[in-house]
Image 1 (cartoon, rainbow, N blue to C red):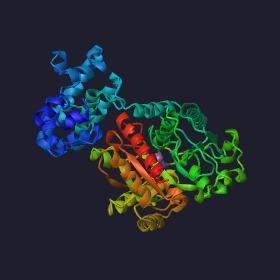
Image 2 (cartoon, rainbow, N blue to C red):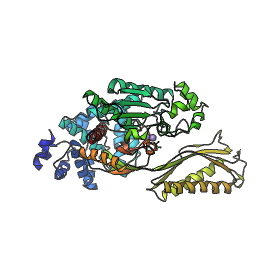
Image 3 (spheres, rainbow, N blue to C red):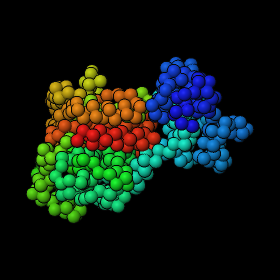
Image 4 (cartoon, protein in one colour):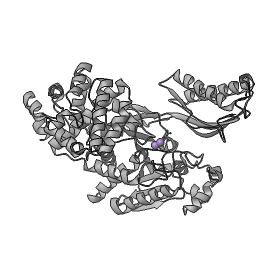
Amino acid sequence: MNLARLNTASKAEFVQLLAGTYEHSPWVAEAAYAASPFASLASLKLALATAVREAGRDQQLALIGAHPELAGRAMVSQALTAESSDEQGRAGLNNCSPAEFAQIQRLNADYSAKFGWPFILAVRGPRGMGLSRAEIIATFERRLQGHADYELAECLRNIHRIAEIRLNDKFGHSPALGNQVWDWAEALALHSEAAELTVTYLSDAHRACAAQLQDWMKQDCGFDEVVIDAVGNVVGVYRRAAPKPKRLLTGSHYDTVRRAGKYDGRLGVLVPMLCVRELHKAGRRLPFDLEVIAFAEEEGQRYKATFLGSSALTGEFDPAWLDEVDTDGISMADAMRHAGLPATLASIEALQREPADYLGFVELHIEQGPVLTELDLPLGVVTSINGSVRYLGEVTGQAAHAGTTPMDRRRDAAAAVAELILYVEQRAGMHKDQVVGTVGMLDVPAGSINVIPGRCRFSLDLRATTDAARDALDADVRAALAVICQRRGLQWSLVPTMKADAAPSDAAWAARWQTAVEALGLPVHGLPSGAGHDAMMLHRLLPQAMLFVRGGNGGISHNPLEQVSNDDAELAVRAFQQLLEQLAEDK
Ligand code: HGY
Ligand code: MN
Ligand code: MN
């Protein structure tokens, strides 16, 4: 099967050629035929998903209902379609232990009793190799707790993933480049300082990641030079033939939050690395240097020093950061020395880049949100990155006996912070599509169950699409904290730990991403970034624009459920290659 044949087929042939793609539901292909001819396999997949989206709820429910239960009656009675039988077989669902089989039957019954349709999961998974029974059961149990509207959408997204894999099989298409990116991300995630992926600045796991990236860049990808710089950035350069040309700068971060996903930051390092590998394998050179940086620190987890890796490039590394200490009392300078870094200001200031040496900065990143996945779009072009401000705060009252202290004589620090949290939620909710506010850390130091909290520490993360909206939110939250504490007779402190202005994408670079996405046969969707990125630091030095990649599991991020499929990783590589080719032709 190939696109030429499909694009010249009659409607009946088209439907026949796609038979089995959507389980017992030829109407999907019939509806998608109107969008023929298709520029790419990706555009065919999108047209089929769009046909389902436009079909309305009754047909969507019928489509879901046309699918068999996992390890259900159809499998037991061997009434599965060939495709479903292959898929459930690869996942070992025909080989359950009695306990697993009983558990899945219970889950099937509970799920359909709660939602009224069967649980749908693409059991060949994001890599196409097949999920384990344990992964399937864990996903089943997690999604059973979900909301009906989310579950209906998630079942349809899984049906599109099932169809995608079945189409790949029909076309003999293997997303080999996407598989490589996916496998690298898996291998990199083996380095962690906790059971669930955690890689904070200059920890042993962090250093192992740097060494791994350096090794891949040198040994597998053919970079001409690869260094780990004075702040721990891994910097790879793939040179053009002639000396001193302008460079294209790209990259993202390899540190993570606690209990992180495998793709936040890393995807934006591994994709351009693979582009260099493909250039090197083909013996090709671009008419400009390509500099790929794995930034050492973007998340601000170990030290109050966010965007540290990219700040070194823009000359905004704050010398005071060297004296910051982590929760174990280790200073950043000591952590640097332990990691074999010079830990001198001079060596860090030497990292500052000269803008005239660069064409610009591009960053590829997972969206970390629900927009692309809810539109069934693999890629999106960032229009602007939201501005943000962060604080670490503490409210101080008086610890006292929980049993003998009357409610009207308390100076309860935690109750004050709780009031502030509800204020942040209400205030940010007033302009929900523009601002967000989060208290992500909350702690009563040395608290006891029978003691009124005398101290309460907390964090504030305030963001908005514009700096003016961010600053208004910031002022209102700080004013509310003062009012709450004064009324309750408490002290308070707020230490700012980060402030980053909104970073609108450079029009020319955003246009290059748009052209790259169109070249893949996909529509261009522009969206703002609610997450902060290294690009907002490089924005101060160079013209920048970002490309977003769809996240699975509803787009969740900063969570082990963060997910990217091998097919979407493939499209990310193809889009990056398109951008490089455009730039090569511009030169
Ligand atoms: O928090 C952020 O927006 C980014 O993931 N550091
Ligand atoms: Mn992040
Ligand atoms: Mn990130």
